Amino acid sequence: MIFREARPAGPDWNVAKTMVQVVVFWGTLLFLFPWLIVGAEARLGIAGFAPQRWLGAAVFAVASVVGLVSGYTMAVAGEGTPLPLDHPRRLVVRGPYGVVRNPMAVAGIAQGCAVGFFAGSYGVIAYSLAGALVWHFGIRPFEERHLRARFGEEYEAYCRRVGLWIPRKGGGGGTAMRSRV
Image 1 (cartoon, rainbow, N blue to C red):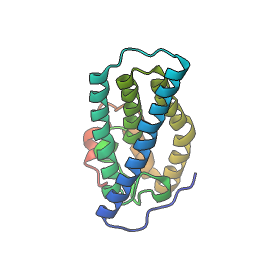
Image 2: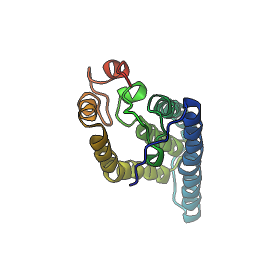
Image 3: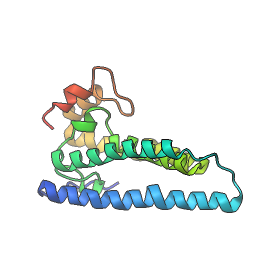
């Protein structure tokens, strides 16, 4: 993976770049690919389940807010974007990052599963969970190695305080959200 620090820029520019990334990634990973999966299931005669549109819509809305707030926090407090090629200049440990270490991954996985519930598609849910495994075992180790090399003890302390996938009682939220970044 290639990690490159974002060039110095104002928060408006970083937010704009982040929103373009959101449109591209969400459009591809949360709409195009699930649509292709549902179409393939239909052509192959693979039965789904009764769509749970209310559940899918509710989970998608909540997860989307988490994802958008996370991207905004990364752009403003981190002075960069979520992409490794334009990554933040500062370690972000507040907002959603004070609750879990990668709230954007948690939000994206929840969004993908929500699309599966909305469509009544086991394939879309499986695709979303496979994405979680790819992120956890394929991408996360590189990202964490980079963060450890870059931020050292500050990142180590953050990891001790804030859970990767699940919030830690008394360890994340309040303390990390009040931290300097």
